[in-house]
Image 1 (cartoon, one colour):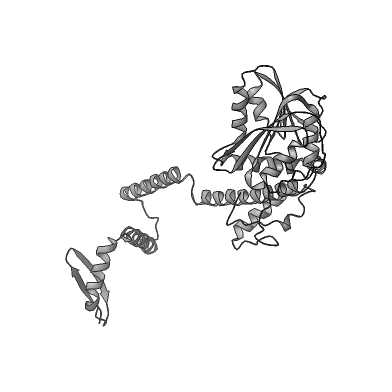
Image 2: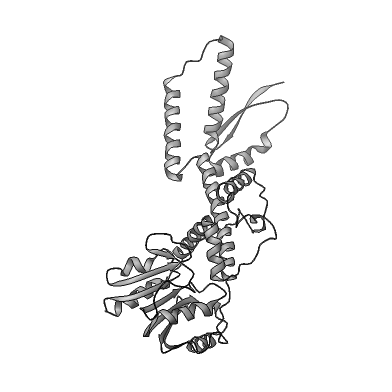
Length: 364
């Protein structure tokens, strides 16, 4: 037999229809739950009940249901709250998917940067230049990844070099920036010095594309030669021989590198000294992460391949031997789209499947 019973707990009153089952034993538990949760679901229940009532009314009368003024107000409130969520979160659920897609793209881009960067450390400058000449898109990916990484550094050695040149207070200096990237030094000092910017690919009008072992400058025509995080190839000795050739006697050689690349900093300095240079300054920055060395040209190269002229390549630990397959179908589709868009015409990066891509944990 069905009857109605009211369960009362202090300020809470619940109406329910029940059969022969007795719910009196659960009153205290229900009241405790309602007190803790403050009935956050009640609006949802009310809306659901209202929808059910509308359906029943429409079914019984066979007429369209007329929206009341209270329903209109509820709809307006829902619309306003949805707009607020969009403004606060930056997007709707579709926007969240777009953010996920962006994160996946960044993860792929980071993996590509690591792969290209590792190749540059393990090949000669001539091969690297040939690589980028055949595949300019690879350099764009590398350059974009490098800029993203540099923006995260608390300290950028190129800024220290710019400040040092300004402190010389000598206008008319001729500077050769070898491995210049986007020619930051030329942008900062073009009003007080003549800056020749060289790199494997010319990213703007200030940069001249060349192999750093064959710089298109005359003998002893430069006051300062700069290698800022650009001693990457396997033929370091050829770069320094070329620096000695274009540098005036008494001119300065600036080398900025990551400290972990030096097997022995003392031996490296001694090796550079055998190539016609004398150490005049050493600086450790960012808690010893970067090393900035200053040399002065004293004469011609004595040894072309001195012992100790070694810099370790920056190699990255592989997270897998092949591409990680994503469990999320959406992520998997996005990865395929990125491959098709960025790497379809890339002859150098066709072995992308050997990359260690992890869309769930993008790193740089």
